[in-house]
Length: 487
Image 1 (cartoon, helix red, strand yellow):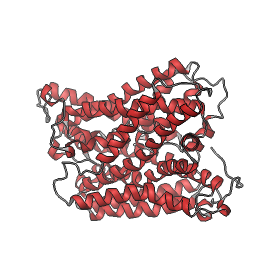
Image 2 (cartoon, rainbow, N blue to C red):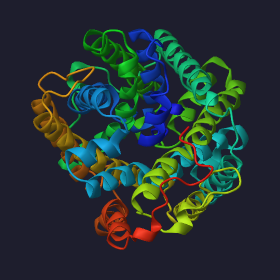
Image 3 (cartoon, rainbow, N blue to C red):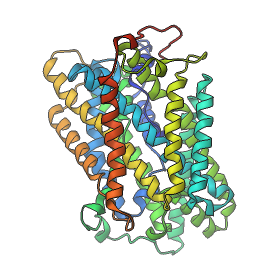
């Protein structure tokens, strides 16, 4: 998600926070590009794509064109014309039930996101103590449970000032390690060492071995997610029509550089068959530092990466649940127990229930023999649930353009209907492809994989919100509770 992989800010909380800015609080399009980059870019996905070598460039560019660009421009129009984020967009464009489904998916994806994020933290932290722990399911499960519940404890106390950790995390855990990795990777090749992955024109495209050979591209859709919340800043630009596209294209260039170059560096150093989807970044650092006799730096880089990831988790832990809470109080979507606040005004009961589910998922690492397989499965479920929200957003955008063609918008996306069509088709294709076991998983039962992914994505993403909506009660509405703020 580094702050890049962290779930995006919830719609109501984000809108409330951003709309408090005075009209004269302009930001430059370059500053907006930097903000977008910090919320999207990450090193965590690099090992996933490094297994493809040079083909990772194509596998990053394709979702950028068919998903990142449509998501960015479409959400910019929606944010500049309607406040309230994804819930209001979908509610007004389609219906309130669909609006609830959209904001639920934005929240529910975090249930599977945090185990995958903390799985990365566990494997990275292992290199600080004992690299062999990176493949231990018990170690991974223990780190997930301990770190997550520590985060819940911190969040439930209403701690202030944690948000600033995210921007620092971009520099500490993404930019500095990324530049070091790529620079030393270039030096590694410059010394005459052969690349572990071939870098010839024949390797530009991934080898076709059936649909399963392209499954890992699904993970890139989640890597690019979150642009819909950065679009709320469009009203802070002096000339949105001209400046926002420039900002988006600059951010896309920076994001692609941060994603592609470290992935290539890893593919130069670590053979694909030896690459762990969770520990690949540390493998690459360890290998390149060993080449220069600097292995003592490996634990330091590990601490930097862990610090950034944990800071991001703390920054956003209560965010999506806060948006769900505010909407549920207005419409009565959740039972009173889940709407209760602690003395610090934090939705602690939602965090605790979420934590119990995270604990169960975290324990699965201890029972799934291959930690990389568990990491991938939870990443796919996260992506599937989030993609449901994007499908709804593209449909809502077309409906809003048709219903309110003359409504004032700070930015109007070019060819919106066609762009929504491309984004919808790409999101749907990615969602369907996610149900196919990747070619890297040669062992295991495909039926079990399908049951886990399908049950997790469709059950959590569709069945659970349907049940909440079906059994909602008028008495559950608590529109203006004392002590609730939208900041």
